[in-house]
Image (cartoon, rainbow, N blue to C red; front, side, top):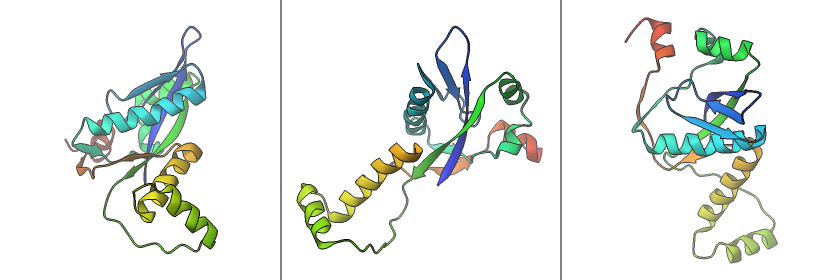
Length: 155
């Protein structure tokens, strides 16, 4: 699971704003920190839908080399990590459940497989608990961000 670092800012006269240094143009806002973080997950998913390739997430140490990131953090911004789950091939995963739970899940599945139902339930839980975002496509070869290019001296 990839984790993209976002910078959460708040000006005295505005809502909370959030941007992803690795994802140009990927921004979110909210009246509260929690609202901005919820919207960050949506912005991250929407950004991935509009791009064929995703950059590899930068490490915080690499982002701290960026003058804009250092300025934001020195001004009181927070760095937050937003998880991104990308689709790939499925793997077998054995689970032990009480028979009554399996029966209830099968009844609630409403036309989808047991595996699909459990996967959807887990995705919902991960979104609520850690803000994880799932994208349906597997990204092509990752692109490198300006921060990552500066680190290696390549273009």
